[in-house]
Length: 197
Image (tube, rainbow, N blue to C red; front, top):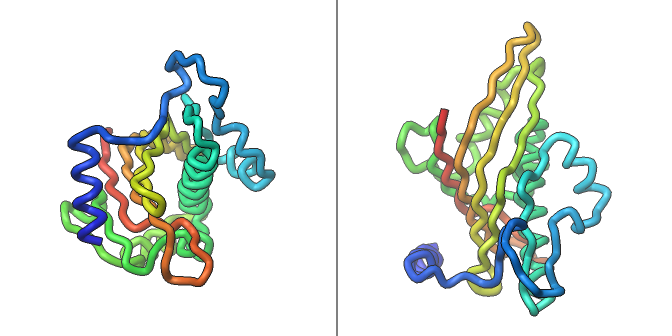
């Protein structure tokens, strides 16, 4: 994990990321691929609860890189969906056992493992309806087996008494192809979430 951190720091410092442009960027490439073309029924169902605003267009001549970025974004989107739906079982399938996170609920402390977040899945009231929007997600590949996904998350919620509120978070998710199983799948290894109310 320390090696991954060093690589990420170097790449961020040098802004050395592989081809990503936001949908508003101008480009003459024919390989522009909007996220909406991910095309799975599962993703379409999840879009009813977790929308993507200002969806990225992956602009890279290497179709394998484009496919990898789509796969990573779909995995992060699924994690946000599982959080919104309070589905801890599905959520933990997409998260490494030793995941680390900085988030407002941890009061500035680094949290390691899934147990901290499990508490919130179990305690949140079932009467709360949630709608999430991932704004301007950005996927940056860091080698073949790691990626950084950044976005703003807007969470709209309504309680049973019809009290509504909107919360805004800046989120950075580090994904890594899992070495925990024989089949490599993308799993979240780190989350940094900042609240901006």
